[in-house]
Amino acid sequence: MRSVSWGIPISTFLAQVNTEILTAYSLPLPNIPDENTPKVLTGWLGELEQKARNKLA
Image 1 (cartoon, one colour):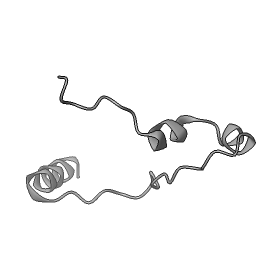
Image 2 (cartoon, helix red, strand yellow):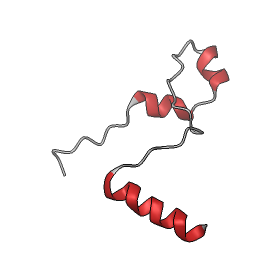
Image 3 (cartoon, one colour):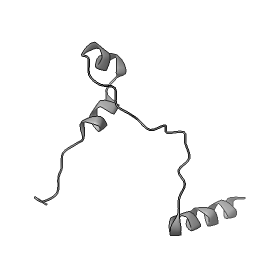
């Protein structure tokens, strides 16, 4: 367990902070990926998702 890094990236922390606080203290705004873009799954995971979608339809 000692060889594993348990640090939290600053971008992860800043993504959770209110943007008003970030601008008040002149902290950088993090680059947060758009949560609304669908993820394209490939390989066995993509096949599993396709099977699940077919069962729902």
